[in-house]
Length: 74
Image (cartoon, rainbow, N blue to C red; front, side):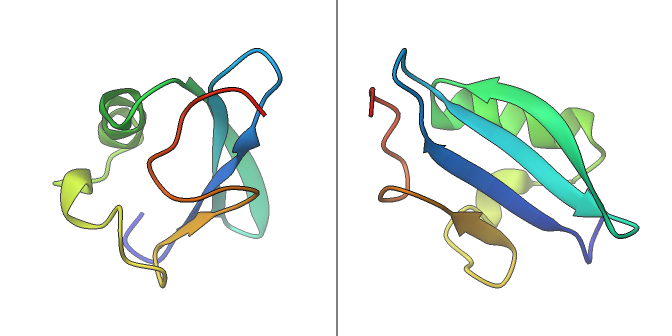
């Protein structure tokens, strides 16, 4: 997963943000995160070591539709 792009999508109307990873030319949905902790748990489960170290790396994580680390409603 080292070369995968992680996408944290725009906040939903009910709160949280969908998280996906692009692997092998396709997007894989990891779930709906409501916090940085949720995001880290999803990324660890997907096989990424030390995901907390890359959350602010724009070459690895794309935050769409809102600022990084904001989890409220749209």
